[in-house]
Image 1 (cartoon, rainbow, N blue to C red):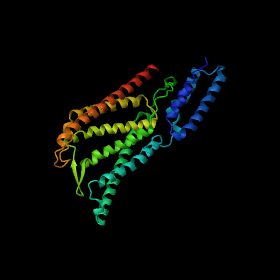
Image 2: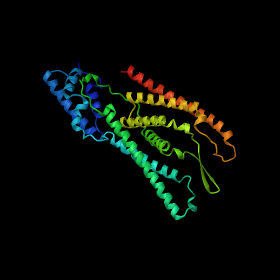
Image 3: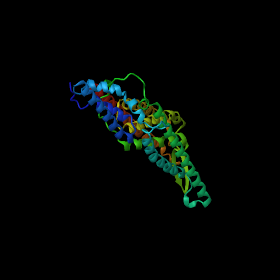
Image 4: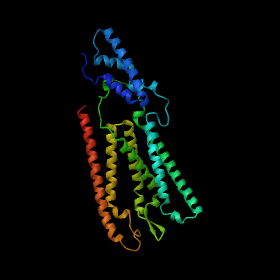
Length: 335
């Protein structure tokens, strides 16, 4: 029986082939493999004297082998960061590193004397120190990004070929999952990296900067109790970056990334809820306003504002979990 379904086994096979190829090789390679499959189908159709159907397609595809196997001759050598991840890797570097360098330069000059009151020697010393801080932050960010991409390259199942019995009928139907917004993901990666660097390497610079009579003063606002949350924040932010990079690579939401997102959102809810219940222990405004005593009035008010913000974050994360779960259930129901 001749198939009339546009989503044929060959279409599914070629879609899987496409997903396993570097972007620059996809068009020509898929066209070549499509031609080879079509020639094989035509030859078999003539030899058997019948029209091409799903059974014939399955038999031909069995001869060609799994998509991961057929693309292997077309793939270049393996690298620390492979060709499928490399464009995304470069894109993240080009955006993240300049922004991090600028922000660290700005942070380095906070709390220093006014430039107009510096001697040439003091200015050169401060400039060299700030450039050194920026270079150090860029190197740290570069190392973190390389590490994250390398881990994804060598651990995410999509990037490995598994030798097992294969059946063309197990090919997934061609679906159109929700497309991602690349700009938002890249921005999230950049700002998450900035947060990681600030809270892990510049924690002692987080506070209030005031200028009294031309003299800068610094008052820390985060308490030692906050330090115990940093490993958990690192875990949350690290998982967020990994998820964003995988989404940039795939270009759309899929089952694995939806499950990953649910886990990340769940962790976000747990950490935020803990923040909310211990808000009074995590920061202080003592000394921020000098001797005015304004912190006694403002801190309780700020606590209430932060609690409202935390509630919004929890609700938003919960809604995201429900949305992701619904998409997972719907994809199972529709096949």
